[in-house]
Length: 315
Image (cartoon, rainbow, N blue to C red; front, side, top):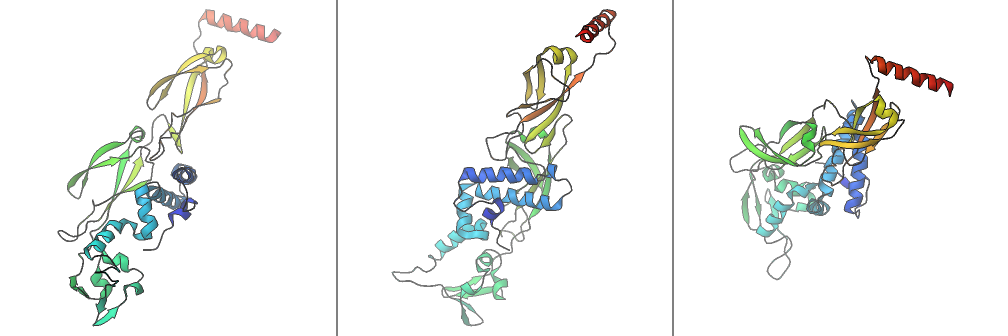
């Protein structure tokens, strides 16, 4: 497994604050979002990398493990437990000691294996070419093989992404309840730890990688975290001004309309868009006005419009 530098992916330094990481993520997520790069496989790969990096670096506990253990940060707890079980590497009864490993009857320095740490938690037998290995303290049996990871896709309506929610999924015949954070995006993948397969009873369990498919909405389109829609104004409100009811994802709101509003003009309603993933911030709702021309006018209405035209022609 190659080392992935999450700081480099987000373009921030290792001393970056949580806010700096959040800003960098939002900028890159907008840049590589599938809605803005349809059919672009490279942008899709970048988008997944950015989400993965943000998932780790935006969480203080995960970030601390990543800073300490690098690519093996997810095995940090197991490593610490192994250290406790062995009394700690390089520590003994009042004097320094180093655990010795033997292979084919000769001492082996664990440092010579670049992937030694990873092998501790997956298959030590494969590393040493046998089903067991011996330390200065005796013989240890090889670890059980890790179970397979599962992949699954979950469809959500746009409204489902507004708030954190729980859903029950059936994975390999077993029902599990998962929490879905607000702000998940189309194509985003999250890892549900310990919900994959199991190679042997009692052995390490794989993970579930859950991808999201956000279904198209009949009214709103998305542009990053912003929502786009059209809104029809009647001719009289457009000309004279007034108020109009705007339908949002969370209900109706009243908006003032300026007199003389032109067809195709836009307004931005702050904070009425989609939430950012694991953030309190939200995008905006951007509306484009369409003006409805009245049809089937009454005789009186026609007369009034004719008078208006006459007045207009004389000015």
